[in-house]
Image (tube, rainbow, N blue to C red; front, top):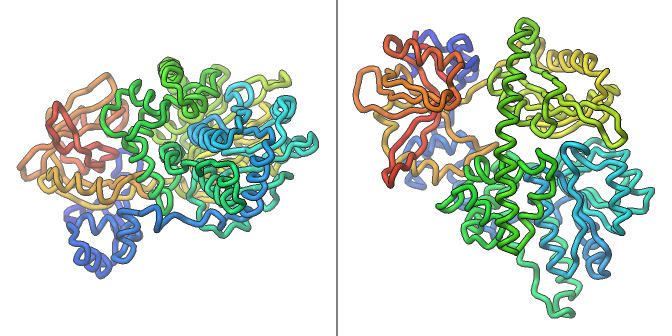
Length: 613
């Protein structure tokens, strides 16, 4: 099959589609595998060839197959005390619980922070400790702790503060917290610097001195591991026997860990696969009143799956923070009152509707600006858009859409008055492989261009003084050009295999692929297959933005339904709508199982395409 792609192929670590042949401006890359490893895996575990091929691409061999496909809690759960500093932290928090100290929780407003807050809240409540929970307002306070938030927490009488999903680089606010007499412990997973804040404990697998090997964890996973460690310390001290108390029902909170893990898009590898497997099984029991209410509002009638977290549950939890209701998500996931859960879930549904309308307008303004300054943006290795009308709670979502559309790192800056009444810029960035967004923001902060900034390799946030935006833009341009050796960033599209339409339409094989290789996410991406030289017919537009079509092999045979979501107004969408009758296409995408009125069929979701010249 590869020989048929002739002119479209160059050699760079295997067959690659030249970027000019991709209408989505992507380079198609095919990863070769070790045939001996593939054959051994296929034979030992009786696997279809294409599934064995996918697993070997993900560094799974015959020996690691079982732990990847079906991890077991009692066998594959890591030692929580492998974290740097966990021994001291667990002993310290266990003592604070025993002494009934006033404990506070400061958590980020996104799904990872919200689930972290809910896990810690439920854990502390088990011991009769009702924590003071503080979720900063996304719009007025922004990400992470501030001097004013530390003062409010101190005024609430908090003695011991747990900081979840933030704080690792918040030096000034946490020095102020120390001066106020707050005993602070950080439970985080964001990139760490050589220096750590002036606090009692920092539990973060990305600390420079941490050798746990658990850097794939989201903050909710770190918080859960911390609860396991504290529970163990209380058991050792005889706390449960002395107080005639059952140990904390930790396993019942894995649904929260799974939700935060999927929504924060951390790698679904190692212990995260364990969390997601058991977590979604737990979610299906509907023991968490808040999650049950969210499923009802989101019309999730089957057992929840990871895709439901990303498309339905997560956006609703996040929606509250985008419209000045940052604490709704944490309240929802912490309550056992079904009536309260229903009320909050419907409030979040209204927030989500409002969010969608605002986001659509922001995208329109942003793309108009980019197209108006087309030459300027075309020459830059990144996208940076700002506007006074932009909603600060949606900068990350819009940056993500711009990154996908233009194939370059994208940053969106909004303007908000801070607690002191001073106007500041708040930005979010989303990146592509090979360009570390967090490193850019940390380096810019070192040059005094940002008030604060950090995050992950693929996503981050920052605060900037408005008059420094031009200098920041120049700095980012120079930084990215150095990272890429002054070459224009090109987004690679990893192709997991080449199939014919006829060979790909087998329902049982596609279902087995999802069951065996999934759950899919960051670190274990959903496989992308290329369908070379396909014919396209019956092309039409749905809801003014999606393209529906039927595809078949060039030599004929069976037809398969294909969807190109949000494909209208893209170069590939234009080609499909105008030239489908007279042109053969190479299409890249993913195979899904479509269930319509109880009937299942295979459907192809297009991600990119090239003219088969």
